[in-house]
Length: 81
Image 1 (cartoon, rainbow, N blue to C red):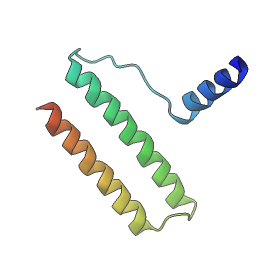
Image 2 (cartoon, rainbow, N blue to C red):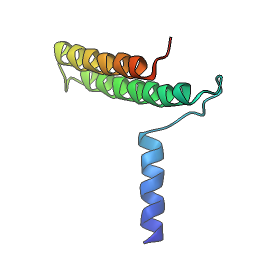
Image 3 (tube, rainbow, N blue to C red):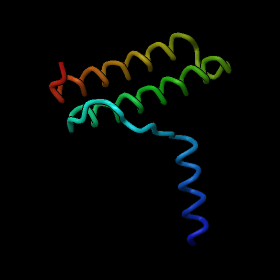
């Protein structure tokens, strides 16, 4: 069971890489950075799907636009200037 857990952990690290945060430490900045990295990862997947012909440009734009709105909302909720 431990080997399976290690494999899943490695797979998650590969599919959802995270970079350490080196900016000014404030809890809201750290949380926003996590949202920003998630946004970046999702946009990357959408771009790859569109490039491969799995999504139309309009679908890709709509999905990225929705993700952008979610990121703006997260920034506003965290009260980051």
